Length: 255
Image (cartoon, rainbow, N blue to C red; front, side, top):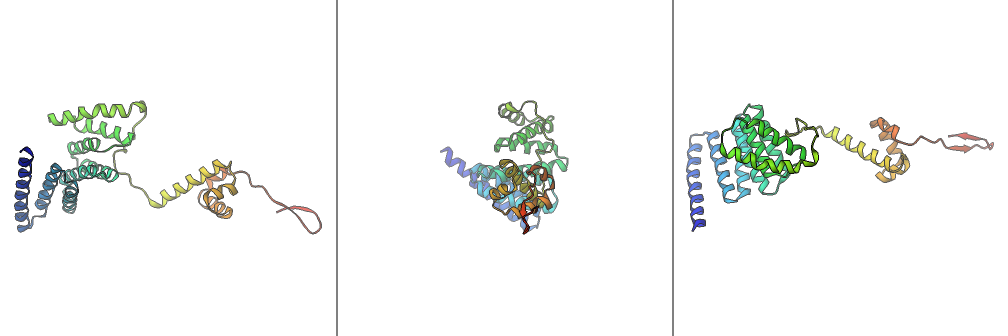
């Protein structure tokens, strides 16, 4: 009976939301239409329909972003992040939560940024540096929040965070660990290439010839890459040995 009652309530909720959406479309109020979509996403989450929830929240978020409504955008990104996390899309969920934190923080809505950070901890299995940063920032941003629900959630994650970070006591938290990190593709590719070459050289005691074999390229190609793009690795290679050859007169000369 309880299940039937719950289904009936969900059905009624969707009926009311559909009516509201028709009205907002009639008056061409895109922001209110997006608000209806965000509310529908929350109903879908309550139903366990996470794919539908993510789609509705994504649509609402796009509308809020176009309208420049940062606070509403941050709230909707939290909803979208929850849906993604429960769909098992962990990396994307973390990115969306961090975007919500960033949007709220930049707009001065620190309470909402704190809720986004707290929800991130609740929903996603985080790397330890992000976990610690999210917990400390959520405590700071929600320090004046009087909601009993928020206080209970903060208390609930405290032990989880303490256990996860027990092996990292004394380490410094990077202040930007919680925010979305931008990168330049070319720089990242160069760093990855440098790391691979350095590891290969270390494995073969600096031999360019053997490192090239490990990397699947020619000796000449590897030498060119190091000379042109990673001069700092020249010290990692073994000294160049000059080859000796014998000329027609039988005299040994350096090549």
